[in-house]
Amino acid sequence: MENTVLASLPKEWQSWILDNLARGCEPTAMGEIMVRDGHFDNRLAHAAIEEARHSSRATVAVRQPMPEIDTSANTIHALDRSVQVLFTLKTPRIVLLGNVVSDEECDALCAFAQSRLTRSPVVGDEDGSTKVHAERTSRGAMLARGETELVARIDARLGALANWPVDHAEGLQVVHYEKGNEYRPHFDWFDPTMPGPRKHMEHGGQRVGTFVVYLSDVEQGGGTAFPGLGLEVQPRKGNAVFFANTNAFGEPDKQTLHAGSPVVRGVKFIANKWLRQHTY
Image (cartoon, rainbow, N blue to C red; front, side, top):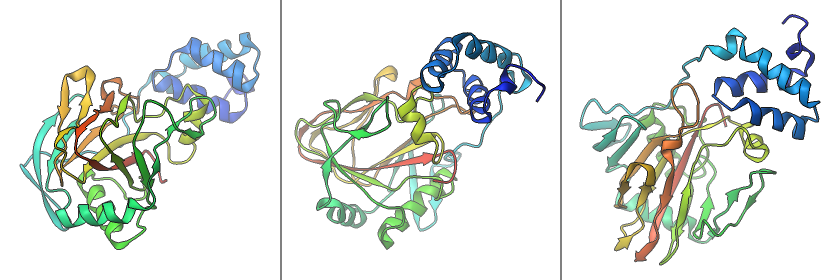
């Protein structure tokens, strides 16, 4: 790189500017982050961003590999199981799948996680720490990828469904909702403009896709709602809903705002699987 304002910055900040411009982040907010987190002079930060905006790397969006479920047929053969395609939406990409896990697998996974359930946390915007919050009132347990034969089997099946490497994903998170429990509208993608989520992206990159696997039936309530789309997926034991968290250029998709609706009657068990951009 030539001797320019951008080149005078540390290489990690050069990459940060170019990557965030490619994602479509707002330059003014980027400058504020550089002043706050990088302790750069305000004029230097904004000059570097403006210079980068005119570079070929920042102005040419590059398509990135994405998890994608092949819905060209009504049945998908995912390793050891035939999975049904029940519903598809192209933009944002949402796919409802049936027969993803058996009743026996659902029951065994719930029983395995039961003793480890603790109050479900959220990621803090400022420091990246996980903390309990009124927006999320469930209890959950994080399982290591491949922790048991059952977990490894489900990990592999979900990877095959999404055509995505198993090691490009977090471990399963089993979550338990009782009457009144909910998770208010939120995004699964990490906001690259915030220091807390940005720390989580250092290991594995962005969350590019999500599976919500339903491990129990629910008498009333407990759906997965997409408020901006007027869509709600009702929980049915053995089914799963998949949605992409970013577009093909790696930019967070605000249409994937979603919520776990309050359980009105019964108990809800789900397993979340978050797919990452890189090896996790």
